[in-house]
Image 1 (cartoon, rainbow, N blue to C red):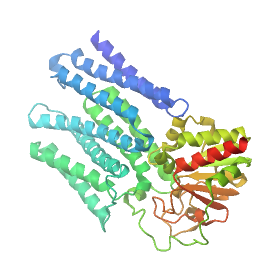
Image 2: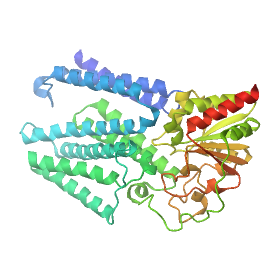
Image 3: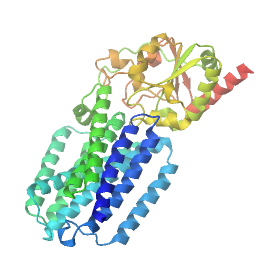
Image 4: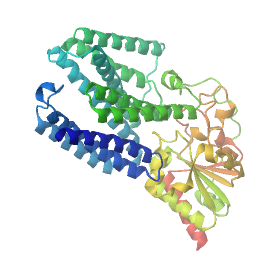
Length: 470
């Protein structure tokens, strides 16, 4: 009877994972999808505990030696995640995602470490395929752990330097070969020394892979390590003969891989270029085409221009998240709509610091999903738009991506904000974006800068429109 309940729990967990991922495909149903996958994870945990009690002791590949310790760990981890998740700011969401994703990879690596150390103690005698799968999961999980920690440190401002040196790709390739060699040694002659060297080299590889990558590529990196974690979990699920882990890991791994490739495509770059290029380095001639000067206008004047426009497109960026101004932005949008202005939001695939960052930001402010358009759906509309307002975005609206072949962002699809009749850019100052290149949009005749913190600027705009209505 227990065996049947365990099998049903595992099947239910897998089904809930699949349904939850499907629901997450749309912003309108994403919250429901998160609840479904959460319930599925609970079912998977219950099935894991029941699995060990459902089969005879002599047939168990693993033993559950301390239920109290396992339950305590679940309570501490779940309680901490719930408490932190409810308090994290939207600006800190990317680094939280990176950190928790790394924990998943680390957990998979830890499971693999236990399996490999068991061989050192002479407890297990398993097939070569199972050993190779376990070691591969350990390698990928370790890379995901250390790489995600570096990504978290970069996003959180704790590691501001980008470490690059000549021959870096060759060094990383050599460390990868060394990790594979250490894995072979650990499998052929399992000992504490061989395992320690293997995991140390694997963790080092994750660090070396991530430290040269600039902030502009962080959304792709987070997505890639998410795929790595899923793959590591799937491999360890196979090693543990746990179907729920295999299904969950394969789904996360495939979804993360597809998202990574789609985001790289959105930047018109290959994944290899993201991981191994020196993106963001100064490039000779990268300021070609800069002519004229930046013009600035008062926030009130920009607001009144939008008030009497017919169409307005809003382009949000990370600066909006930093200023925590999404609610005030939506207040401005509602005032414009009341005045008869048609307002839309345009989202670039790599805007922000993680996949879907801007969608999460706008959803938190209560912006209806039907007002938000992806780049490919709205780009042709800019040329017939009266006003485009860019708030905290930079590289994703830089026309240099179309015209300057020497620019590191050349060829990257951008939002065509520069084609609107009038463009306002809300920005703290005249600094460059993450790509480190001048934005040609700021110098165009139809563009004006509105300098200041996004929240302060939007407050002034809202007040101007309210006074005009009065």
